[in-house]
Image (cartoon, rainbow, N blue to C red; front, side, top):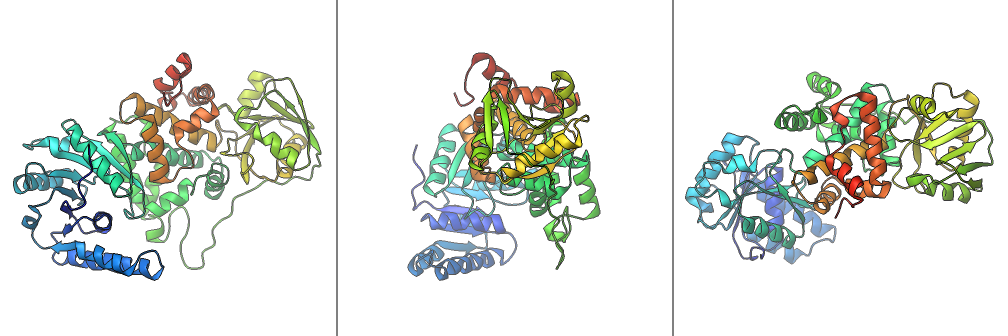
Length: 505
């Protein structure tokens, strides 16, 4: 299947930030573009705004003046929807309301040629529902861009129950021709990104509610250990809590109240208070002029250690040994079950159990659990928790070892899975369920999470790097600790372990 020819007429309905961005993308790819909005003058204002953005690119040396003139010449604001009758592709980017979008699609179907593709930029509504009742539902497809459309690479090409495969394939190839990274998805609640990303917010919100640490520390751990661009609290402040909470509620309702997607009471309270984040000046953080951002908390130690003993393989934490040696610490390796001994302390990579539970069940004294890191050699911060019977001396020795390795050490209350580990495990679990249910391929899901929300690694690739068996064990321990279906492991993970297969097979 081929992309639409660059001379094909593209129409965009909705001249807000998203619609204008999509129009710019299509025009930059060479298409003549008509932009329509039912608000008088809005389309013309949007085209003028696009021209100003293009001029800024010229001033920065990122666009030639002649190219700017050509792109602007391809953008045509129109005042009547009838002017879109000659379009080969219409992309609607109007209000997220099912009835309003359905009415628009019915109007377009009667106006445009039978071969015209009708695409919706909806982020949450069912493509199947949008197409229901149309004479040509096979021509309706989702084309979900991410904001800002000219900059964000991902486009979710979403097929409803009636969408013709060749229509989805044409849009996929068209998005590639426009310089985007498209992925195929089936029309299920949240598609790929808005579904798989829910645990990223949900786990931090739960950890905050349970008193694991403060916002600044939890955010710093996701950034400095997990490699994410932003922590959950600063990201939801940026998105807007009204928007983020509404998406969570939408996905929760669409999945008939599945507890995995349960909205947070902490976030609801912010919405009820009007503390919507940056746009209101207050969210989890204060954005008033002169307001100081709180700093992540860190543990300090007066203990002196010059080395440690590593017993057995440390799994995904194995690169920490190289880091310790590079810092001049002596490391003695011997057989064992994956532990680090330093002074009176025993350090271990978390497996999803609370430290006190694991210490009791495994007979380990002075146990200190270490969180997951994306790269133990490059991370600048790590989280730890410790069992109730860990002495102050042993804790100091554990902190001293990690600090001498060049890590800031943030202490958490004794909760299962710490921060990065439980977040990544839950992201991988949701991604695995999406594969299991035929929403998208494993490769497209990983691509979507990296290109759409800038994850440092696809969640399924991350699970394979950690070991699928280890990921499954973490989830089983989380479920055992909480006794909730929220943490139930996906059958996809269980099957992968049982069959010895990769998640990307």
